[in-house]
Image 1 (cartoon, rainbow, N blue to C red):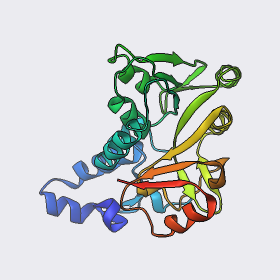
Image 2: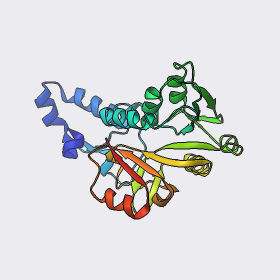
Image 3: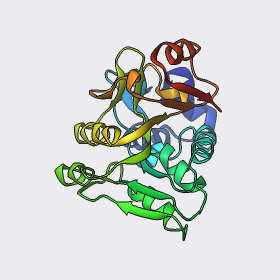
Length: 243
């Protein structure tokens, strides 16, 4: 309801759900802690409409746009063939790629994401290269100078790059500076850079720029993506796949 309407009121929610206003206040406080809402007098406002875009915790992201992320993950995983080496960036969409990757000999996956690692350990044939560093608990991934330097001697076929913000003019952006630095290095060592995102990220701009759209080779997203992406893919030369 918050996402659909932009804001909600405590009194009307209590009346609609036949609970006390104190119960509603506790629920709205919980949603605020998850980054879904921001508190307002007498109710709450959707976090997306309050100032700059902020990064929700990974627990919140796991519950958002799951059907779209699964379709994107399945489509991206189908691009990986025996003999490929790929980097899976941190994120809930790349987690779906890990889930759907075929468990075949000859596939090597490099990642800094704890969730991706956990999903891949269920597959006995895929070779896993985990790049360590300092754990950022907000998204359960590793970052830092050690993480970046681990990529210096690697050359991979494909990078599947998760997205916090995707804007035609400003490019692909993220909330976290260390993530932007690592993602730029990942793109540098990859022959193909394939952005993967659900359509909620289009038009968003976060603080830290990763790369421009002219630097990606592909984009996989859902059918809710804006029409202008087709023109952008033609002019900037990346392959657009809608699922």
